[in-house]
Amino acid sequence: MARNIFVLLFVLLIVCILQVLGFSRLTLLHTAPDAIALFLGFSAVTLGRNAGTGFGFLGGMLCGLMTGDMGLHMLAGTTGGFMAGSFHIPRDSHATPSQKMRRIYGATAAAAFVSHTVLAIGLNPLGLSPLYRIVVLGFLATLFTLVLAFAANLLILKNTISD
Image 1 (tube, rainbow, N blue to C red):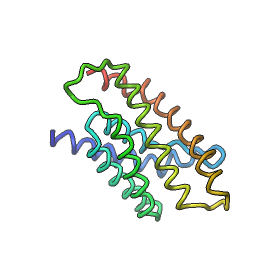
Image 2: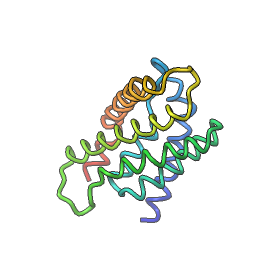
Image 3: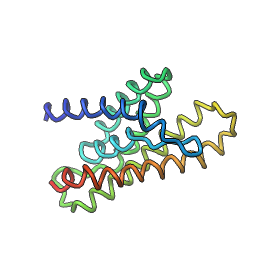
Image 4: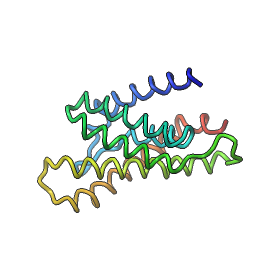
């Protein structure tokens, strides 16, 4: 179990670097997909709420160190991981791979929306109204993150979830 945690921490570091240097550049209407929310969805569904919250905190801290808004990103990651933990499936459950994948999609959407809502409240570089940023940009970012989750399911997660 401890080995798996270190592997997940290394994957979190890679995901944070990809998020800051790559996915944040893929913007449409000033929103970008959130790879950290996808990671939080996967880790929270498989490991639980505490792991999702902890990984969200660490992911937010790493992204905050890279971007300069450490406190806000830590809060966004922590709340996103906490919400994603609501979709946890216990290890001894008899859930099918498709049920697990639906839970990961739900956890990813919850983590993306909550973290983007926190970021929308804290950051407002465009001078838009908070309601517009939360509703429109939060939903768009969640949709982009779900597209990323679908692509990750096709490429990576399908083999991981089948176990």
